[in-house]
Image (cartoon, rainbow, N blue to C red; front, side, top):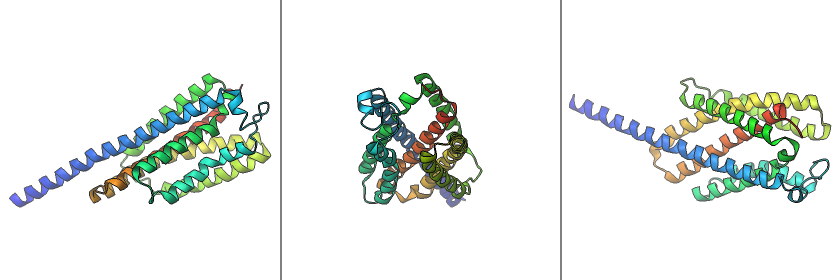
Length: 245
């Protein structure tokens, strides 16, 4: 009996330690994501409200990207692939620095929204996105339902959205843009819950390894996933509900 109590006490202690570590891990994920969001907003606002700076990337009259603008447009996507390939070679501090650099480049690519949409509608859509994201992420964190099966379908949806978006750069179809935006909101809403649960489950599975360096990089990767979910949901909602200048 005494041995059973000892084992039960030890198990309880490990569970409490994992719970405490998980809270700290999620706080770092959300904190890193929030700093990245702030950096993106500041860069986008600084460039988007400066006609001189914005003209470096886009035609001042039509807002169509020039050659450098197309480079900036696709740079975040290339950086994501590069980050995934290099994550094992980077330290946790290096991964965090890379994430902030990515967030700054994303700000450059989104700067045009401050010309295309009214400031009030940008703020309103951002608030709607923030509330929706918080609710979806909280549900993904607390639900007992295993939603890991969503992953393959959601990733296939993202690939489809990417292809359709690239095609529509040349077609400029309003109907296709509406369809992409509506479906995109649903896909990234699902990804927000899915990624949150995956971040939580991955930490629980790996917490006992004691590899602090890996856990640090895992938090940065989690922040990147949720950051992308938020940014994409915001942009698709802005396309649907934003008031244009």
